[in-house]
Amino acid sequence: MSDKLKEAREIINRVDSQMAELFIERMHAAEKVFEYKKEFGLPILDPRREEEVIEKNAALIEDGILKAYYIDFIRDLMSVSRAYQYRLQNGLKVAYSGVEGAFAHIAAGRIFPESNRISFRDFKSAYDSVVNGECDVVVLPIENSYAGEVGQTIDLIFSGNLFINGIYELDIHQNLLGIEGSTVDDIKKVVSHPQALGQCHDYIKFRGFDAEEANNTAVAAKTVAEMKDKSVGAIASAETAEIFGLKILEANINKSGENTTRFAVLSKVRAESSSLTSSVLMFTVKNEAGSLANAISIIGKYGYNMTALRSRPLKKHSWQYYFYIEIDGATDNEDGQKMIAELNGVCDRLKIAGTFAPHSEI
Figure (tube, rainbow, N blue to C red):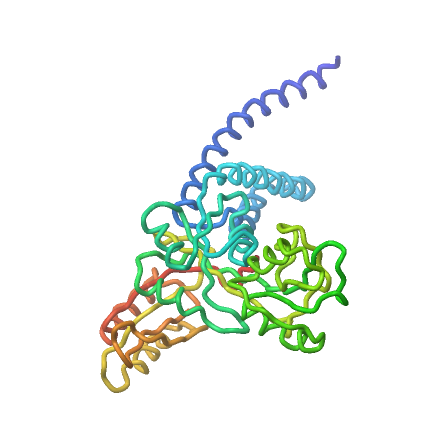
């Protein structure tokens, strides 16, 4: 063996040994990152943060050829780190309302792929499971592009103590499902949630189907699977078809292709992350002329763009309302703190409900 080869192998062995120690140290740090994400209800994958790490580390390599390989190395290393965190995530308890196969179940699985998803009968039960420590986070719908806001969820956020740490957009694709051996021509009646039936009204009318309501789309699919009747179909997701052993007879039968539901992830503590660049404010205003206009003016004064503004009736107070606002920007900086201080002057109650990354699709 030549001296050069021997020397090169000794260097590689020494570096590999050092890298093994550093790898262990890095993975232990990844555990701490996971614990933080678990506590604050954040997903493991943060594309923006990963790109920041790649850009920062790539700058350490001057050789242009080696830099390209180093970027691949860092990407692979972060992929391994994510895989490890997903394994740790097996114990994460994620609450949702509905049954297996419901869109909330699908959304929870896409946000937290390796988590333990736990079903609850309604929104409040799912929300309370986090409050009392039974679950770590809860995933609840807050808005649908077809049906509008989900008032019950908004009310829970306003009256409760959990924080929004993410808002994610799930494209809803409704499909006609049937049992094995059935065809579209066999179907005489469809079963689904009233909202899904409304979204597919034109299709149902065109086909001449009778319609029957169910508690949700997953329950509809389960019912059809148990009936084993070729003449009865369900309107539900592709994931639901797989769960209950149904086949897709016709895909994407929604009236509008623009059908998206936004889901909020809530936990006991408010997260702080560079990727969470939008905020949710909720408040009531003093019963004085111009109070709401003053509040909105204050938000604009400090350069915050409002992306959503909704009003909701206050429970036990007839004809009084609270307001839900989404803004571009965080509130933990100097301008944000000044804005909050001024808002406190015109609001009876003000709550920073949380932060999220805008336009996060799942």
